[in-house]
Image (cartoon, rainbow, N blue to C red; front, side):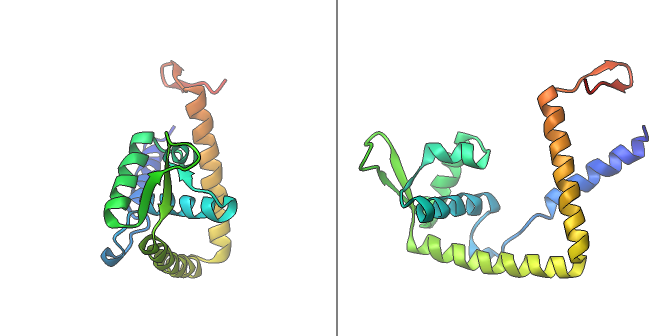
Length: 160
């Protein structure tokens, strides 16, 4: 297989990762924190109950220490509060504060504008094709990770 093609794929993936959604400094939030806050807000809206910090890890596909670190950061910023759950005193309920709700609204407006502009520049059909290709690439990568792909013979990968 062409080594240059492999190098180009890796570089393109790294470059895309580097240019992910960046928020203006005045919004004072990182992408992972925003995903976490959105999950908390959606859970409270649909289920009318507070989210347990221990539940967030599996829902967002991130480690428990990463969730803990983000929750600490969000609490210091005043975007969430945590208190002992009234139904289970061993757990701490996580809730958005008014400041947290406000930052969610501001980041949603910013994100919507940026995505609409990106789609307009890239084209709707190109965007649909890109989504399909990203989905296919992710499916293949997940499948290979599950199979723990190892070369059996020098220079030869086996997918069985």
